[in-house]
Image (cartoon, helix red, strand yellow):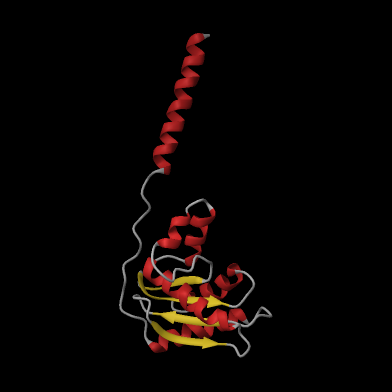
Length: 165
């Protein structure tokens, strides 16, 4: 009986240690930056995001930035909240400069890692910012703001980013 208990205990410890080691594996590195998005590409991204956004009753702001986070193109609907303008730009800048969707920062804050808000000034830890990829490289990012939740904004941003795939 002692051997059975010892064997079961050893197996449980091995599984726990093994799963902990898997959980601590480093994430794959983010994709590299590519050439900056062109104005023509940015307009195509914004147009696709607008098509998706029109499926909702909200007004939106769309910001497209280059890999450095500098604004390349901006568009908005007529009655968008004034605050949404800077929020859209911030989401795009956050996504481009950190090479990930802005929702990833929101998720980190929600799981008890508020330090992400101190990474740099102007960070926007809300869904709605998405990197724009071409040939496996980040050429910019889109930020969308205007709906009551970033998750709705993210749908339009993802549709915009997908326009160049």
